[in-house]
Length: 217
Length: 164
Image (cartoon, helix red, strand yellow):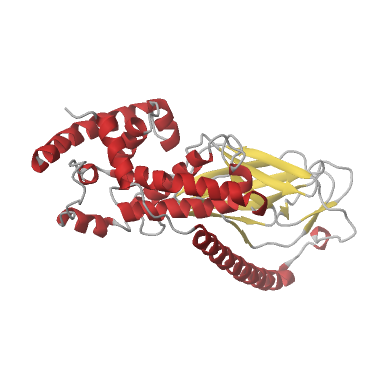
């Protein structure tokens, strides 16, 4: 019976690479990779801005409640203005559909744009998809709104695909605001790790969030 | 990263070969091990500011490399390559001091079993630590270890006999 540890150690020593790639080559490869990423981010940003402009333009005539339009005189909603963040979703097929809601608990109206959201684990670590932060794209409506005091606003939220990274009992939704972060635990399902990769690669997922809309009433 | 270029360079020079040795056992493929180790170091460059403060930055690189290895296999990108590899016998090694072809024996095991065997038996990680690293239950680690050992030991013995 061979001593497994000794056999593995000997094999690992034997398989050690005798010639590692030059350090300078590694750095230049990293630089090329960084440039590619910058180009991709720029291209993505341009596309996103273009799409947002088109969506905003398409939606602008359909606004029926002028009182809910952005009032540029109102200050931006800070973390202390919006009170607690509430979020919920339910799993339908490969997508978690839900919403998140904030209430303007201040005595004045404030402006709120599309939320800057990050999906986190129960321990507030960013959730990863294929070792990258799960992208959260914007979907219409993305306009900045004004929330009157005491009124609530809601944004549509969904997360689709397969999640195969570190298991988490629930997801924490962290929303960055001008002077702080508001977060909420989203109870219920987390995306399953898909074995059927017809529509998504293994572990690939992405999320989307709309801008807020003031809840009528 | 400029300020600590020399520390990064030292880590790279000291760890690269060792990590390739370890990952080769996990991947059962030397060239694939070199690729995932290089990718892990590339990832380290952008996170060096944080990782350099860790007690053991090499452990971070090793963990990332193992994770990348798992992702590659999950996606099945290398399935045909592995298949070909199983079909075609490896070239005989020039060295006669180590007659047992452990990598060929490991290649016969599923990746999941190879990983727990390498982490537990080669790196001396506890079963609990392996479970935490891979995000699987302790019982699963134990069963994979048991099955992996049961499959591996006869192969190692036959390799010894083949080369005798």
